[in-house]
Amino acid sequence: MNNAAQELRERLNTITDMHIAIGLLHWDQQTYMPKGGIAMRAETIATLSNIAHRMSTDTDMLRMIDAVSDRFDTDTDDGALARLARRNFERATRLPAELVTDLARTTALAEPAWVEARSRGEWNTFAPHLFRIVELQKQVADSYGYTTHPYDALLDEYEPGATKAQLETMFDELKHAIVPLVRDITAKSDSATERARPLYNSFDEAKQEAFGRDVITRFGYDWNCGRQDLTVHPFCISFTSRDVRITTRFDKDFLQPALFSTMHEAGHAMYEQGINPTYARTPLGSGVSMGVHESQSRLWENLVGRSRAFWTYFYPRLQSVFPDAIGDVDFETFYRAVNTVAPSLIRVEADEVTYNLHTLLRFEIEVALLDGTLTIAELPEAWNAKMKEYLGVAPTSEADGALQDIHWSGGMFAYFPTYTIGNVLAVQLFDAAMTAHPTIMDEAARGEFTSLHSWLTSNIYQFGSKYEPQDLIERATGSRLNTAPYIRYLREKFGELYEL
Ligand code: ZN
Image 1 (cartoon, rainbow, N blue to C red):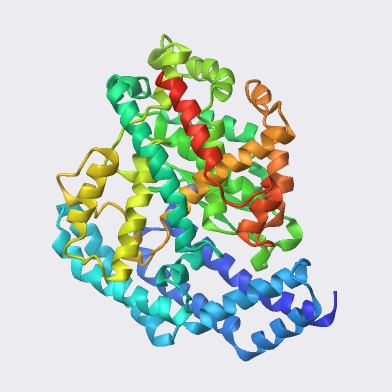
Image 2 (cartoon, rainbow, N blue to C red; image 1 turned 90 degrees about the horizontal axis):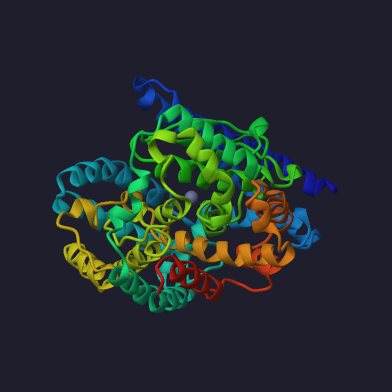
């Protein structure tokens, strides 16, 4: 390694250490911090963020990046590091300080206003905040710059390289396949409530926890470099690949949330744990994009955790843990229960089939807000009309409609589509893994997941952020984002489940 590369690495180590410390403060705040600590904690985080921001954007930094880019191709680790550092530098320096402050202040006020508006189902309480946020998002997009649409500039934050035009194609293909599939299922099926009933009963929380731990241990989650704690909203957080933590929550009357969110977060965590350890404490040492990250959580949660093979091994074990609740529920009934399709109002409760219609709706609304073709006042009505069109249901209160998600109040625009990118990529990657190891599902039926875990490690995990997201996917699967395998998967799986 030459001196320029060494110098850049050391600077990036220091900055990444700062972000790791900030992450740990956030983790502590969500898990064990006493309530009284909130205000001071915010100050500490702001101080560290400021130092990290200054170190990331000074002229010295640019000099180091230039020195390394001149010498190393982006295919090398050092070249990739310089590319990422330049990207971060440009994004951080293009936003005027005034706009950053304005955004922070606006979202700080918008979040509590959203909480209040949601609890009362009152759109007008939140509307002026959202108006301000949309105006600021337009300014952010202008500052970053774009060639065709402001959405591209915002999307680049979460899914580098993806564009609004690509998302439109993706959603268009999905819409044409999924809307009729949902209609067929709804027309055909017995009551969804009846179908999902085995999941509602009394399930001791400690036993749920032990079962979930067993599942993700078998998947390959490394407890020596991880731990699980309780939070209101489950998440995964990484402080280098050697310490990747997950959280969950339990509902003693409903089996589904803890079990599947544990698999989901473990999917995120195994990705982070599998990254090349030499990338630790640099921007290379984390997952490459929100969409690719989500593909890893969805793959384990849905492709594995909602498969027949998985339950062939785990269902008898689950029955022996909860004999009173499901002892006399047969395999097929249980398998159908965990794969219940029910058009519902709430995105986070949506099943595999209907989920993408929730993100499609949000994508269309975000684009229209940025275009100026939809006003904030018209938004709830547009929301309800789209719900009716895509899912056949519409909310009676905005709390279950346009007010249900926290994202917009935090200034997160163009984030929702990454959930669907994740769903689509999950199937592409799973198919590629199956081609390489056709016995993956036979192994799953024996409670073994080594072939799948090691394929993901070799083809996705290890690279961290070294390659652009779409390049990574092409290297692993032979093609870029492609909806065809996902649509085929949905039709086959749910066609069989619903006898279509
Ligand atoms: Zn996730």
